Amino acid sequence: MSAIFSNLLNDLAKLPERRIFGRVVGVQGMLVEIGGAQTNLSVGDRCAVIARDGRPITCEVIGFRAARALLMPFSVLDGVGLGCRAEVIEGVPAIYPTRDWLGRVINAMGEAVDGKGALPAGERAVAIRGRPPSAHSRQRVGGKLDLGVRAINTFLTCCRGQRMGIFAGSGVGKSSVMSMFIRNTNADVIVMGLVGERGREAREFIEDDLGEEGLKRAVTVVATSDESPLMRRQAAYMTLAVAEYFRDQGLDVLCLMDSVTRFAMAQREISLSAGEPPASKGYTPTVFAELPKLLERAGPGVEGSGSITGLFTVLVEGDDHNEPISDAVRGILDGHIVLDRAIAERGRYPAINILRSVSRTMPGCNSPAENALVAKGRRLMAAYENMAELIRLGAYRKGSDPETDTAIHYHPALDAFLTQAKTEGTDLATGYAMLEAALAPQIEMSPPPMAAKGFPAPSRSFQPSRSPAPPRKRD
Image 1 (cartoon, rainbow, N blue to C red):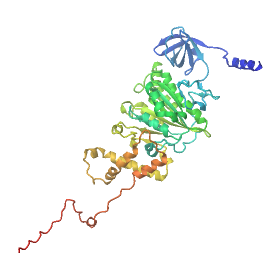
Image 2: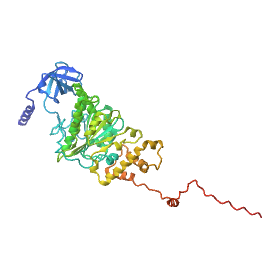
Image 3: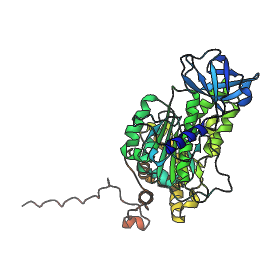
Image 4: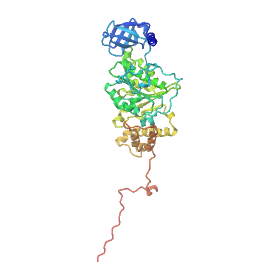
């Protein structure tokens, strides 16, 4: 009896001393106006709006107007009308992850959606909208991280704790590249965030691209395109929160997010609903303020913890790599991988444009021999690209430029090196060995003896003349 009585006292101690609530005084589109509790709310707080049928709808405060709190729901507002009760939810939104979350698929609220039962709760709370460690307390980026894609492992080497963007238009192969990372990386844990993904493709990605082996060491966060802007935005925050938990456990985490552009679009919808004026191509200033807050959460942890290597896809609108979101993200991250539609149309996958891509941490993590090999490959690709149009038209004459001649000679081998099947994996050491073989010195044929002395070599069509045969004598 004493144990039961003790448990009852603990449960009573957890009950809030009071409940604060307001009333719905207006609904416009996806915006709910609450009166009576505005002095007890701040931006980011949550309320449970009780619909006519008694169903609670979780909402978040996104602003204030005329002494009223402006809320946006995480789900549909069906059944909400004037006078409905809005109860204030106290506390900071947080999750309680454990290592048992590996292999599970969750939504933006941290709830299981894979049909495998409820998620176990850990002991330590992790804030959904956490803050990154301070710049002075963070470790530096670690050693190389094997991603299994030889074009990236060699020409765009990624280090542990680095943040890189994958920039591409629609249908150029972002998801395929990310599936190659998942299959072949040597990171301890993978956290995958599908933000605003198509409902049909979400399951296909999990079952086909992630696969059974990849799923065992991964946590997948899914928010489909038909969900509310708050759910899509929170899916990005949830992805980083789960990654931060595993980082604090001393593990090296590979955090993949597809895509940052849909996160920015969700934030734009929220800001415009709150009445914020647009700044650039319809994006509000809050969008550009939230991007670094999200992306800076990835990176090395403090001393004694692990790291979060972030790879974020950016959907380039109209293949314009200078549109506002692409330009802002490129300035925040530590490198960018550009997928080129022209390369994809030629049938080379992954369609990585090496010359337009860069890894800012790469020169420092390579040996001098590796840097020299990569520099040689880039130089040859640049020389070929400068004359590519003339070469394709047949207007370039061999011997006009020795460097271009060398680039033409090595182009097939380099193109074959950069081509990799979706199911194929190449580790770091093998990738450098293959690149060295592709750039092996050209073997020259020894010239004929006459040519060596300065005489022109005989033509293949040349036939030496023969003396006529002497006439036969008649008997």
